[in-house]
Image (cartoon, rainbow, N blue to C red; front, side, top):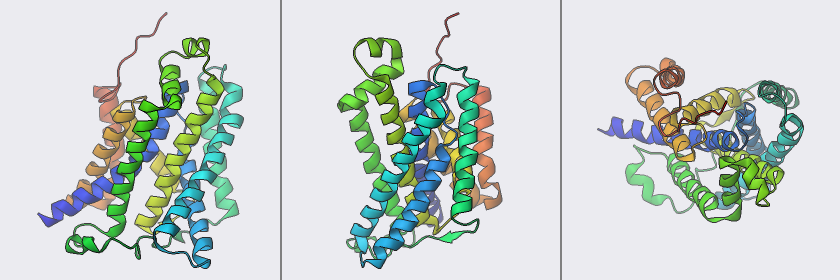
Length: 303
């Protein structure tokens, strides 16, 4: 029973991080019908920025929740600037081009960012500091220490809070209303006075912030990062978005949790060698059985 609960917690942790990345995919697709294949690299940049920020603030004597909060804040702001720059350079000039052009641009941006970090940092794995080891207020976790580590509990709680804040933004704020309006009918949204360029820019910023937080959390959980972590994580998050239904935020979260649990239980009951295969098996199955995803809706194309 304990082993099952350990796998359950592990799957929830993985699924939560996948959800943060998958939401970036699905929000951008919902606004401009583009799969941002460079999104995984934003996640990777968030992890590297978190590492640099953690070393800097630790040298100043900061510890505990203050250190973790500052690291996440810096990583989120830096990744947001990258995401906004990526939209302005790689996608905005191609907004009226054929759908293949921005897709190629996205792949090119992904390759560029991955190699940029590879050349400016290091091709080797880097040790990420254990930011959750001395967090005050987590003494109540000792009775369940054999089931969940402090960082796993932090990841699960933080992801839940972030998803709650994101839901509030999308449902209760003007920005969320504008994003939903553009997603449903871009032309009508512009006729009502909504600035399409600003909505797209804010969508990229919001998605980049979520990815960066995921990058910091995965660094804390695995204790190591490198320039390639964005590629595989991006593919898995894309799989989660497709599984739940690209363009559906609840679908992205559902797909991410399913993928996280599937990977965790596969690694626990079979072998960790098959863990990465699960994502692509699920992707093949969902595209074959229900291409629109679990919560996605099939949209009729006018001809």
